[in-house]
Length: 295
Length: 286
Image (cartoon, rainbow over all chains, first blue to last red):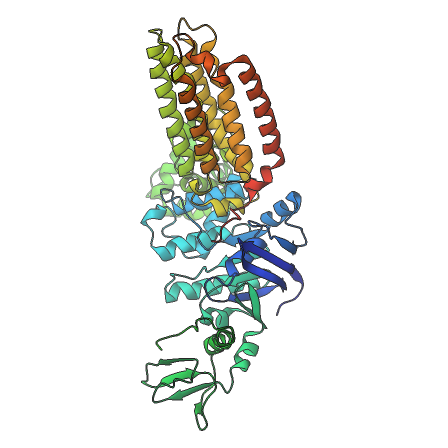
């Protein structure tokens, strides 16, 4: 479970023009994996960028690994102990995977060439790219390229790993390996993981923070989020217009989320149901689009 | 020591070989023998110093894994430039683009300087106005937010982004400026006019960086470069023969003095605001 505080945010706000991307958020993170869930534009990436020290908040206090990222020395200290996977990482396509990670290792102040090459080999092997590490990045698949970025984030065994949608584009086998890697890091360090995949959160995270429009809607264990949906998920032979979200499953039945009618066949909710319900309830209150799946 | 069938290396020879104290000729002989003699290969295993073997293996891995580098990068490393710096210079597409801008600019300046040898005042003016655009283009190409595809990863590293960008800009600007300066100095018959482009170059580049700490560098460079050229065109229009250069304020002594002040002020701002380059563009969401 989470213990010790690695990241502290107090009333943090960041606006783009008049739009608040992060709106007065107060959170603290410690050891273990915390998942950030939320629709596009929820503010997850902005929040992770602030924690990764590449973006300054407009207002509020931030402390990462005991340092103030607003000060140059603090920022440098954090970056020496940080592994970061940005949402849109970018590559030098003509470099090999090894050369690219090696270059980023140089920027991470790993000056001893032999030790650096050992670490580059280690992280590329850890993400399963040992066979293709000397191929140019432009010849690698999308999933492999994302693993190259994950590899560079693991350089130097960082104390804080900030991962912004790292599992997008990974096939099931790669995703399992990714979970294995991240959970190993999280045994001793802090991992913040932004994702759209609720199954990754269920499988990996001891804590989940659900965000929407720059605010926190839920903060707690995934099971606590699931508990909120108990009694709100049912199955039926046909769609029901009173349900907030419904879709036809592979069995031919409809799975519905919302306030069930009398006599409905309730089923145990999954994390995805709870997430959709949370956003759906809020969406109904605020009169914004309800997320749908095959409605 | 001889063939596998009849001879084997003695324990003393194998021990010396394993310790690395055997002469080169004898060691080469043992090398060849070990390839064909399983008995001696087995005998040397307990004698082999594991630390030295591990070091050798690591060295081999280092050599094999080392990224291939261009001849230019190898040349710099032989000149004792640290690997950290040479990688910064040669890895990214933006660095290569900056080199391209510099080379094309310096060549254009050299060609223009060739024309100047015929004594044309307007060609000289074109040279003086055009030469400062070379460093401006280099600064724009190097510092522009989107010129480095992996910028966010680079920014998140402990190496200050400003230092990295400055290393690249200086490495490109230095040779480009020297080339252009040489080209301008070989022009006969224009007295000291041929170096009047230097201060505008410094002023434009420094002002671009200073303003670029608040605004997008590429946009600033286009605005300043455009204003510089427009000012020159307006100034040159209708100028009498012999007055074309003198009419542009930037080339008069007071203008040159003002450019020194602008450069110094902009440099001061850049140093104060260097941390602004250490973050991603905060004006737009990702």
